[in-house]
Image 1 (tube, protein in one colour):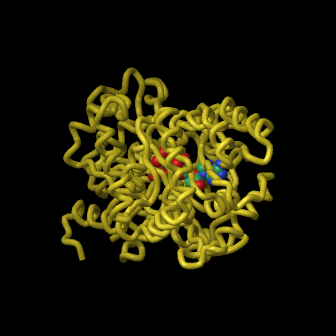
Image 2 (cartoon, rainbow, N blue to C red; image 1 turned 90 degrees about the vertical axis):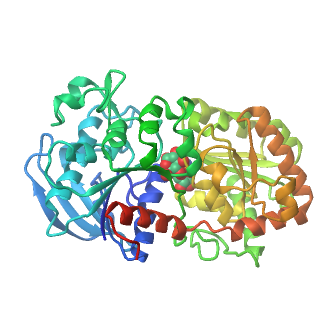
Image 3 (cartoon, rainbow, N blue to C red; image 1 turned 120 degrees about the horizontal axis):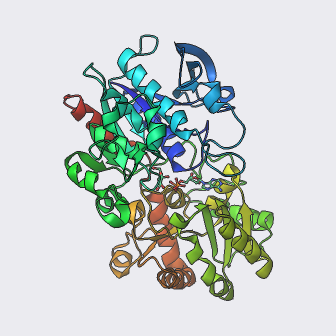
Length: 483
Ligand code: ADP
Ligand code: GLC
């Protein structure tokens, strides 16, 4: 079975969030099930340097204003990647979606239409004799792949479109849309038109054969106006082809027993290493080196979605109860500033690293006791899965994939011994406050805390089960009986 993933990010080549983790890990898990999977991403500056054995597999004379080539190589984990080189679109300083000033690149519609158009070209004509049977497009940046297929009756691969976050709708104006080589009638409510603009996300939702999202709860939430953000109508119409499959984690990268980024490794049976990670982290971040302090971590984009503003009112209470907080994140300047200011107000008790740091993310998952994820919505979320694996209890809002992956330590779960963390709702400062009170109560009942921690660490969070669900979906789409 030949599958082409089309996406804008792929770990370890380029990452701004969980999308990259999924696109980097799910194909490897599918390969273990016998599938032949390649990933297509843009060759942003620096990407080709991280690939091995790069060679050209296709060339295109005009990709929206300049030449383009597809270069096939593989990552250090052996994942085959086709990087779309088109210097006029992707070879520039700054971020992959925005410049150094933080503003989105004004030609993003063309940059990601190019990704969709070349993804579709590989679908139709192959690349050096490799012809995908299914194209799996991820989020709005790849949303035009099925739209380009819909422009003619010619045969093409079947398509799956996965929604990782419907809040990013990939909008462009009617005039920009006119330059993307799609028929004018697509700009209509039955096509990609969305309240006066064109939406690449909607293109995926309208034209793909199957739709998935990254948790069953988000698949249901998306069908309401509160979470669907205007797309709920089309999602209700297409509910028969929409499903939710939770993300897994790459346990080659995220495993406390082998993690090379940690000062000490540990396992559920030998937790001494986790204590060393905690003390190392406290010293590195300027927190008091205190094994008794309940250390909460935050590893997140600092945006409204993530609900981290709800943590700020609780800093006094966390510190008064002997707790500590360590924040790693970037995002909205207001939130960055408020967390940075808190460091001065609570010396030795609150630490904030404003920036993106993969090594510190591992250090925090290992060294903290609990990880806070008070998201207002969360399609899946990966940091709670890393928290489970590292015995760092997730304290999460009851939404999306957080609701599907963490078992709340309520009375019933405590009695049956199945709890793996804490959930709270409503998603308000008060709701989070009650969860923090429960966390401190459990911390003082160390036997129960340790039981929850052991259960969390044993909870299966790898890709096996979910990769098998995707494989079954592809089989079904291709009219094959699962083998
Ligand atoms: P989202 O994709 O919405 O940002 P996820 O929880 O799915 O949320 O994935 C976030 C990913 O990005 C995780 O791998 C997390 O460790 C990582 N991450 C987020 N912020 C940072 C940061 N500042 N430094 C390092 N890694 C980060
Ligand atoms: C998005 C979502 C996040 C999800 C990730 C990977 O960024 O915000 O919840 O885990 O995609 O699917």
